Length: 517
Image (cartoon, rainbow, N blue to C red; front, side, top):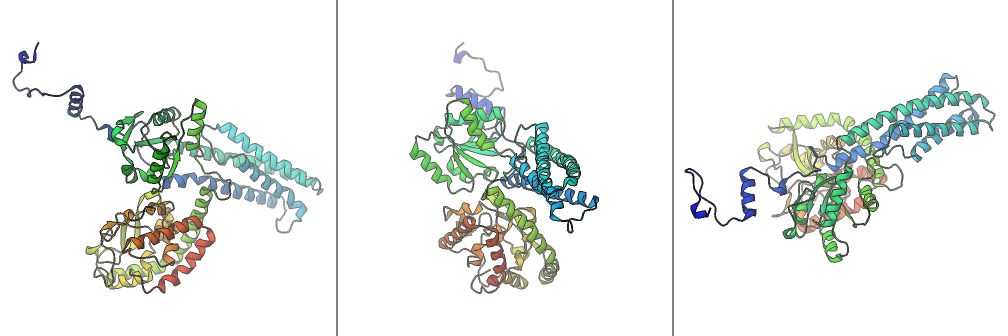
């Protein structure tokens, strides 16, 4: 039947003209309320996204596990010695050496067998067998030491130590094995990546990742968006490189994978240069022939759900040491300064109406947005949560007591709460407000390396602060100098540098009369 002869039922909408098959499909999808493919979650997207900072915190559990093993074995050894009537403080070296050797060798063996990584797919019985083997090696080493010293009588305590140690450490590792596997089932240890390049390499990587299920591919971005499909392997294409740089997924990404043909060197160079402004790790995946080779490439991306305890300058080791010093020093400061914090709170309430604290969204590790705590120094009705207007000399928004707090930096002390939560560190780049402006321009847009300062947790004080770069940033030069100082600190960070910065912070800030705060 021709179009002219088609029967129309009264009330039907008028016929649509000029629509091809694709247009009709789009209209049908719209009528059914089908989502835009670019907004789909994709086959990997978990129900709840976990920031890379929180995932790093759980990865560092391997160091806590080992610390507990050390404490338990030493405590067990001391308890057995005391139970046998031997005092560790007064006993001769010959009597203590066998058990001390057993503890040392067992701990080395536990580490050497990589029992703190809890590798994906590792069976519990195999793991516990390795634990027992480590304790057995410690026992044999202790026996070899006991015989030359003529301490045959210590062989019985060594046997008791081996049995009790294997039971205790085995129970602990069974518990941790269950915890780690629960974390893995919840997706809290699964690395999240974004892929750059809607290419055949990306499609193969996604298909392999779907088969393995040991990483999340949250989205695909492409520098040539006009040629890109709506999705690759079911993973939505979310935009171009500019979209990736400013995307809300960035704080949740552990890796950005460039899946562009490496022979296109100019394009790869442009992409990596563009991505260099991000705090995220960037990897170039070379497509390889053979399933084994591709499996090895993916394994390197998904490897080590828990941090390795080997290596001298391993980033995870550095992060753990820094977290430990934050907990110890920060906890001590919070306890010791509690009376001062209470007096400041009373002063704020007496000076002006409004809340004691002021919370502001600022950029944290890996561009994650965190709520930073401060004592309120401005009149409540003039609070500036976005730092759209930076503080100037004789700023009429600041209260009388607030001027004192800013001059002495006492307004920053509540950030100890952020430190204890793991959102900040005692020392690091100062956290800037989200959307903070220098003049009429957002500060983050003035310096290409700005996001590099987010490769470490922000700090209550820092290298830039004691070098005079503190307070408002009034020009691009100010922003550039602070970013450079922050990057210098990140590259040089050490425990002793942190201690020195903490010690000189108070005299430097109190002696600074030039900076407006």
